[in-house]
Length: 457
Picture 1 (tube, rainbow, N blue to C red):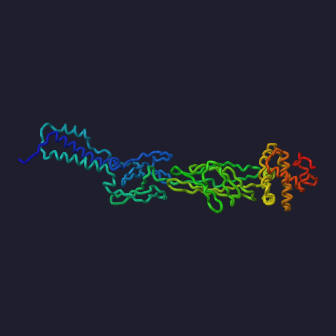
Picture 2 (tube, helix red, strand yellow):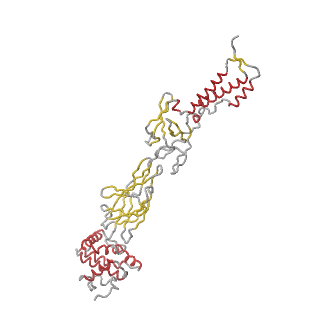
Picture 3 (tube, rainbow, N blue to C red):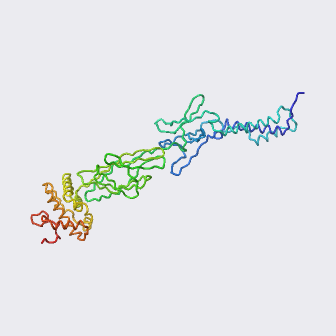
């Protein structure tokens, strides 16, 4: 009789249990979802602290790709890829193998108390357990590329059919002898989305004549999408170059001498603020529109995008404060505006010390005249007489007329003015032998301009 090894019932139980575990783990690896093997999982994602929705996979243009997001581990690095769920049948997720508890119960039910004759010994039971513990389980816990070797990363972006980046890298996999590439990205939710849809108003235009204030207080917000946070860098065009604007919580003046000829006050609080406010526009007087330009660059982790150019136009239709108010009654022609500009330049050149007071520093007087509900039409005759003198190139006579009319209105509506420049203007007038006298032939003598003026000595 050849040597036979005797196995007890307990030994057969151990054998069946070890074989059941080996079968179960092998089936799990071969037949079940890859979620249980090599770290390939569905990633639920989240909404991050900056408000970015990372619960779905989106391409660089913000378009959702696929219905699911899959996590892969390649070269010990986490990557994410878009995927679609499907109702089509795939490999059965259940193994069809009885569980460990059921295995032991089935063994006990089928074995009687007799001893069996078998060539199987305790060492074989240990070998079966070792296959599970030392081979199958460690194999399952390794990343896919570590054990099967057909996943590699290609450092090239993956694009869709219209050229949008779907993944900053590609996973290369060999299936059935063919090479496939899947767009992947190390960022949950897909690649960073560079700023897109960046736009600002194309044109802002103010006519500050007709007695209008230079204050506009116009706020607009930059339109921009992309991965948050976004930062903003503003520039204005001056001296044939783009110049950076430094963020400041307080209003600041942009000096625009070439294109504008004056200043524009703006408020832009910080590089993280999409709001931009134009507080006031103060172009030099001109025969037409003054123009300058603004633009903004929006930046985030995905890159930078330059906006369209905002054209800002403004004009001060008249050369002096009083004419601005009269312009609301009788609109000036371009030719008349040009004459007033010519007159202003003459005053600045020949009466520089007081020209600023006459032409610009009489806002308080204007407010008092408005409060008195003055009829600005009474100045139309004065304005026409002033223009006629300028046309005749009698600029000094025009200056004297303008000076004396302004001072007459101070006497009527603002006699308590304590500006030093006002006192200097009074002194100049009183010492000027050519000052206006209310002679019958003078065009202003029959108007209301001097109705309350003190009698000349």
